[in-house]
Image (tube, rainbow, N blue to C red; front, side, top):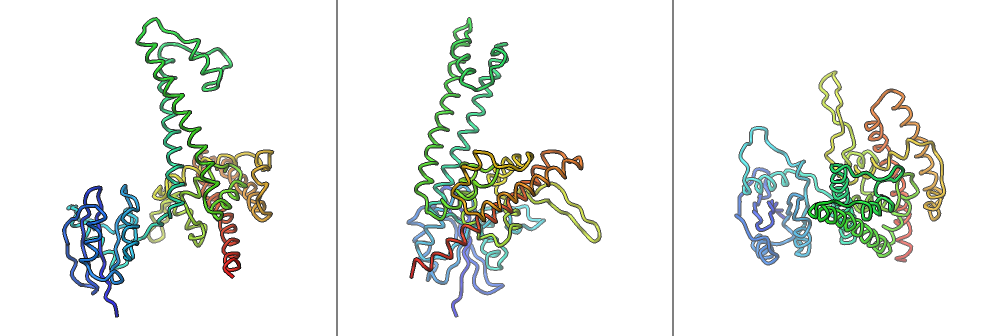
Length: 380
């Protein structure tokens, strides 16, 4: 019988602190010190630890990404990336060092107390990076617009009545209708305006890159992206974001697991006969939670299929369309019901978003199962 050794890795940008837990339940957990975070150093470490089929390694998800995971996998070592917020912590432990963290990971991994996260493949990770780059550009655009608008407001410069902010007419007014007596203020205006235009160019460029990426991703992923657009409030960018953040949705056995992954479920502190629930946990994927909450605002309107939504549903199957139509009715009733009870709109929309995740799960699983059913036929 093989004796499995459990390796805990505390990973930083330049170093990796290593600890090993021997196979026995109460076996020794010892630190092996630190090594440089370089491929050649990792390779030497694995040779030193013994046969790769007897090693199980883990490290916490973080800023270093999944590079180490792929390195260990290529070397034949089974590796898992664990959720840092779910690593057990002793209440009275007030000493934190890299050595202790590595030993704790190795000990907890041997005990089976760690929760692994999903590791995206190359296609999913590339799409995720692109979608998050667009989000960063949108946030930069918002900041640039705020700087310009507050600068104009501070000096009493306002557009003519009826000119909406950030339209072509508004920007034309800023360029041609705003002048200052002081050259320094004109230079400031030019710089702020340049940043606004630069941010817009970035967004256009990244959205074009997303369009190009959709054409090149695997057909299975592209089918899920197209099917999710059948839902009201979820257009191309939202659908791509959901796909990039979730990967294969069928890995969640139930919609409740997906809701928990998003962090949109209520926190709870119950004991005995007392049940107390609080706000949402916010311990899941923040990008996924943000996008579904934005989409959930669309369900405050009565169910209908407009021209834009009808065009998005053109390639969808009838079953996907039925799920999307059911979502409109259920989520709108939910919004009306909770609003009538006097709930705050933001809380109502969060509750609607949580249920929207259930419909996202249903559509994605329907598409993915369809591809799973066809794959054996292709192999034959």
